Length: 353
Image (cartoon, rainbow, N blue to C red; front, side, top):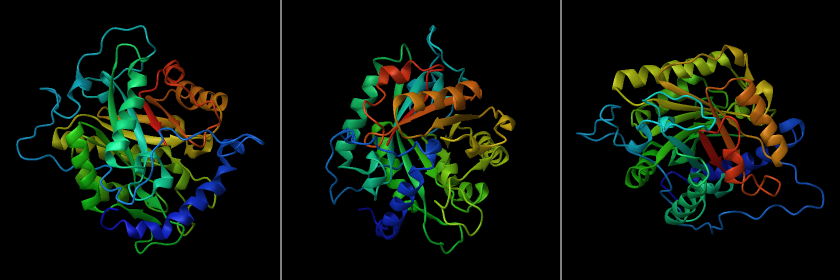
């Protein structure tokens, strides 16, 4: 495992227990349940975790001579910034500096040291990327004229069951581990989404830690309200939340970063599977250089997942929509790519865990 990875193993069992404990609370008792008498769905893709699972994901900062500007087209995922082909599909608008202008993002989610937290951390790097490529191809076949870009959605800040030295209840990947993942992204023309589970931390603290890597045009940001707790409260005690003000502050910091360093738009992903997870949601603001994605993050069968998407994205007027699919926790049959792409509006981000 990557250097420094062993420190995460001390908390993995506690974190896994917290996640299972929260299962009965999500979707009002829906998330994480397994239908009585029903076998769990088979894992896809079939990947055997290996002890040498190492550098599954991380890009380094832009090197000398690398100019990530919208005009000319950025070198990172450059095909995504081309003009969108005219279509009758229900797509949300995206400016010329947005990845979503011409691309749908398909991501694998997880942690490089903890296979149990998602498919991104399972198997060898080559196996994982092959499976991601195959999954993305199925979206490219059913999403109309738009193109695809692959992404690694990394749990870069893991909520801890016990207090951390800095009082945030968050264990973060080291700079070297993040840079390893960026190297993989540079080699394969991927995006990186650095996700923090927040704990008792603040937007400002988490942004400050990840800001050096966010200067890379490939690297984007995510925050998970589920694990955000009042000071001194262990993550997982209940389903957490964030306010629109906190999310707006994160957008403001990203917007300033983009303008200062002449970068393409930054994606900011916020996960949601209950209404109260984003408080005062109607006061979310539109920052011109930030693509705010609300990701439908609930586990379960097709109908409730689609219903949540209809509420949290369509009815709430989200700027961009995301859908997460769980290979082993969603009730079978899983949402197929064609079904996901038939949602209105069509998701700009699809995450597999």
